[in-house]
Length: 450
Ligand code: BGC
Image (cartoon, rainbow, N blue to C red; front, side, top):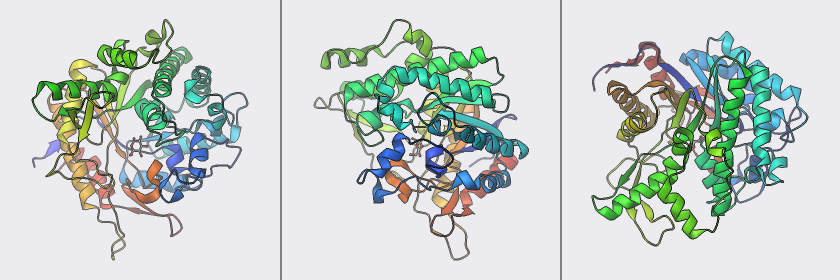
């Protein structure tokens, strides 16, 4: 491997999300979220784990910022818990919730770390779910009000805002596959949720512009580049449907103000009225953003299957490396994806807002965590990102997922994604893994010395 150097202003960071790390699920006036409700119902999560305590970051944030400083992060991406700010999702503000994020942001700024805040990383106030959650268009309005509160309270200190994390997962995994809160299995509901989440993104972008605060606003999409299983025409069709379902259903409205035609036609054929959209919605959704955030973990390989609703099924390539999530390690997919975004969607800065891998980490006899596989994974993806930059992509930064081991949604604490090990059993002790040491070195050199 050759030595690689990133552009001068390239930003290095790590990411987390409120429900996955904070704990303190009912402290200081916080309201219940759909994830509190979902995890408290037995059978939804591996080992019936919950985020009640998680990494106890709510109380240990100072120690955690210290560790970020030790690694040398330029920037830290975290999310704000909506029900901490507005326990009922709307109406009365919980000042103690706002104060927590003010303390966190102060600490970050003191450490010279640039905060990047995600407004929605899946913890919808349960009270809003009781009125239909994201399926109800009123939630769009309440999200926008919540966004306005955060811009007002923290807009002078936070200069990078991400409206939503992964609308595809919110809508499909939570409402079509039922694996995430709120746990529905309903195609039309999922499509309505996707539309309303995107609409709320556009409204929050508009409010950001109107607020006059300085900084940048964007959205984070989970994108996995899709490859056909063969050169056949049919597999090509499968690839197009999968790409439309996973990627373009979200990219096209945001960047082009329209939904992918063929997939829309297919939904219309299967359902009378797949979802409700009002005139002007697409215009709002496609408001100009300042950057695109992408989360990249793996690719998809698909083949044609006429028995599937969307004509494709996913294949698992043999002779490949897999992570503990059973996700294929495929760094080339990151380069291909970035080039595609550059060619078809945007010349604006792109941030990799998540990339990383779960492995079964152990504390070694020397007290350290030698996560060589994660080190290899990260190095390969740094190379892949660098390759895209070399080919002209406007890639502006990289956030590792995750700063620390945390509550991995349906998998609970069973899967560890952190570059910092969290010893939940032993007073939540934090241990820098070898991957954190790698990132520290990469940041120092702004590249890889190989
Ligand atoms: C999410 C994270 C999650 C990660 C690994 C992304 O879908 O944004 O919250 O932990 O992937 O599954």
